[in-house]
Image (cartoon, rainbow, N blue to C red; front, side, top):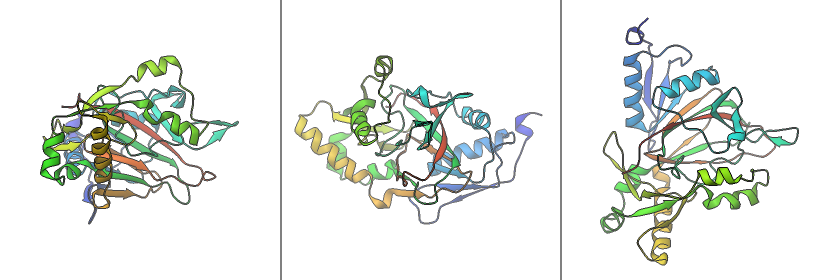
Length: 291
């Protein structure tokens, strides 16, 4: 049956009073997604930046298939945390088996946009809940279009044409000290994540909206300005970009699938008690070179 002839009845409901985000109700991602339905989801993703698909009983292969509708998938540098039968899936988990972690347990503990440290960062990420803790484990999303729009005009003028360095290793050793099981990288992995230059303010390639594109996790310095001014600017932008009024806090429910736009947002994992099991599967979609 041609995809354009397939249709599901579903609703898209923006979160009341939230800075971003919408809930997708009634859609079953284990079934084929028709062309009109896909285009509707694509537009909703651009409009709301985060889509929450409730109660998705899908396999990792089905998650990969749905993710690929939006673009080529990117493989994370920590390949030891791939799902063996589905290498496009990164395991996000604090669970240990035989004393060894099965996934990246401290993913998202600093504000960031996924893969901003790559020349071609991520378009978006999908995270599918497998096991959830009885407390904690929330994920926060901050709207970087609103963050840019609300900057003072003189600060906008100063940063509009500036570049910043992004580096995967910027806070890696800091995180390893907090979580010693975070793996030591091989030389090949280090070579894969060399520093890159990104615009401090990027333009969304599909909507044309401008957004801040710096993060405490991966941005090391602003180029072309004195070091002291770089630090002042980054400190001010980090503080401004995560103001409470820009944030949607996602409280996970079983089998949630959350799809966010890394070109529009930063996100943060709030964490949960170490003794409570948490496991999610992440796929990451390649985007465009920022401009």
